[in-house]
Image 1 (cartoon, one colour):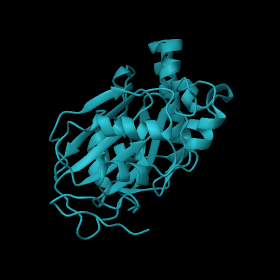
Image 2: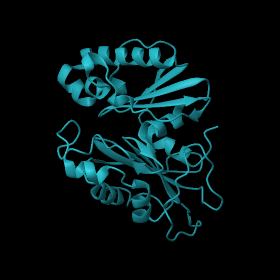
Image 3: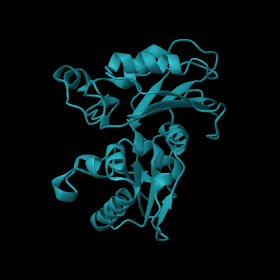
Length: 275
């Protein structure tokens, strides 16, 4: 699909640019300001980054509303970003499987009650294949790129040294893999069986934390990291997300807890080369 980005003077844009993470911005796209949006199961956050990736405005945030259809998400985000500075392009992190800007899975949003609730057939149908990249581009009038949220967060923190794993602890478990600084194909580790046949989301997600308490949750997080280590033989693992500061167990030297702001700061990497 083609794109028709605007110049720095503004105006409408064709939002269908769907180049993958790590590719350079196409010629003619203004690079001064990037609107970075972090979509989460409990909160929607956004800020505007300058050309160096620094925030030009404090993050704005609203609670994620439920039930949440694709159209309601787009309208809520449109209102959320209204007070932010002028931007030239948009980067979006989404908590599910995304390919070429289209949503293949939206596990937190398919229940009217939110994460962990009973799925609605109507919401499953609405989210399946929804072109969020195009819809947000049309609504906000700028070139837009959408990627998995853990992939986006990882782009802000990896060093480009060997195999690096990024895990995010929030409503569920996010994951991303990078080799020598380049993003590898996304795996939805969150939905893979873990302890007692339950998927990772149900063991280390926010609902599990509230149910079992911090001590047992910490034990489960440590076990999850060990499992990922055995699966990937990572050189380094970065742990982020809203619940990462709750980790209390001693971390080995090849594991680093990173600030949750990386979910915003990684936005510029959707347009600039990872390497």
